[in-house]
Image (cartoon, rainbow, N blue to C red):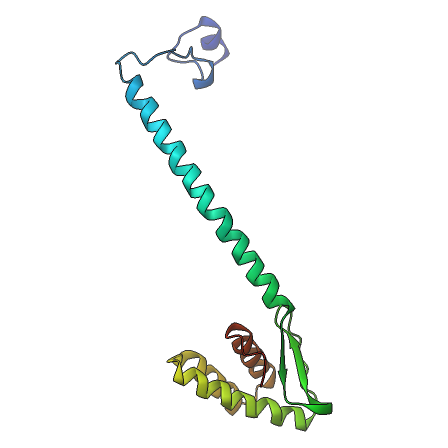
Length: 149
């Protein structure tokens, strides 16, 4: 390969080492210039619309991370941060509060025609999988901005 490179055959040179033409030999430079201009307009337009959208999504996620969901009241109340919910159910009373809220969430999900969510909540409730139930209820409440009971 080295001997071919030294010989200077343009067909065998690497693409980057071939001489570049200053103009299009077929006279299509006007069309190519117009295409590049249209492409830059599209990318500028895409950039202008996508940046505000990304900022808005980031702000929404930041706001939801600061939000809290409270289940129940008093000493046994369960308080979760939407951005990073941690399992909290420990007592029988807290399980009762969670089960009551799970029934409410399932009912709201059915009312909103969210059958998969309602089914998941009911299945977790029936199998007494309280960690999964906690995850589903808190996730649903955070997603639907139901921060109060």
